[in-house]
Amino acid sequence: MAREVFRLFGETVVPRLSDLETQVIHGDFSPYNVVVDPGSEEHFVTGVIDFGDTVRSPVIFDPAVPMANLLGRTPEQPWRDACAFVSGYQRKRPIRALEIPLLPVAALARLTLRALITNWRAERTPERREYLLDHAKDDWINVEHSLAVSLDDVVAHLREAGHGHF
Image 1 (cartoon, rainbow, N blue to C red):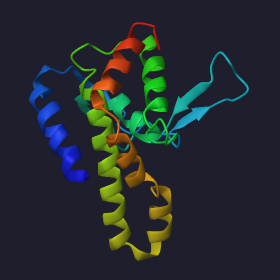
Image 2 (image 1 turned 90 degrees about the vertical axis):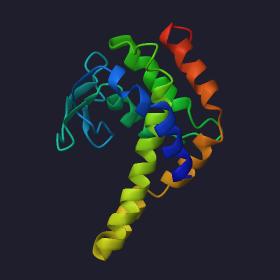
Image 3 (image 1 turned 45 degrees about the vertical axis):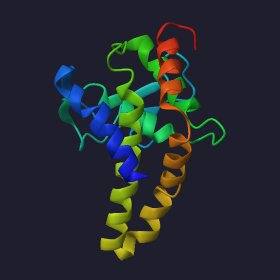
């Protein structure tokens, strides 16, 4: 699966890297790094923490991280939550048309990297093995379920979401 994801990344994303807008990005938006106030409807997100992955990079990689974290949460529709996130994201920061086809591949690559790195770290730090593997226990299953969906269909859905038809 990793080979397939990285083949897709090499064919889809890498050739377009020079066309992408860059800026300093957080690089690790996840449920663990966003501070929320569940009692507030107006300012639900109140902060962001953990700037250890902050880097100058293509902007498209910032929404790819939370998408990766949302892939597979609903196994029968593995892209549902990730696409819903993009719909909300685009209300604040529209994603350029040329970037839309790159986004699902970048999300899959991020999820695959996390699975690979987690397993690598678990081998090298046996005392943290259980914690590490538990934290990413569904990553490979989520990659598999996500790859089973046509990326053309995901891209079409993302394009619709960007025009308010989600």
